[in-house]
Length: 137
Image 1 (cartoon, rainbow, N blue to C red):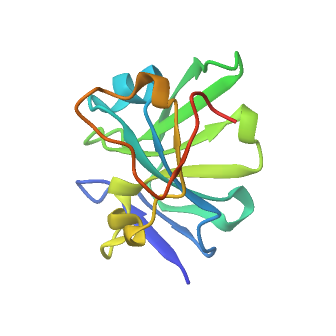
Image 2 (cartoon, rainbow, N blue to C red):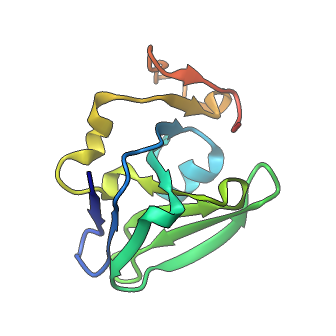
């Protein structure tokens, strides 16, 4: 199956010809700040299956909790958050689920893991079937 994604204005689009390796929610402060939300919803795919097919996304680098670089890609026109490349996962691309097309933002109703649950806001319960990790890894 091929995953398709794009930004809000349509200037940037991407594909991955892989099934997700995992689906994850991340509650780290970095993800909260990047999205202006309480957490991110993510689909992880092998980096060699991922390709930007339209536009040239901009990026912002920041050191993650591991001390390694997290590169956040976004549309330079509308600002939509699209995907990330984390040095700690150098062979994977972390797609922001909200950027996926065709209803895939639902994560197919499956969350495999939640990261940084120590930072989860108190009004959100844990996803019952997801593994709970206080940090990443």
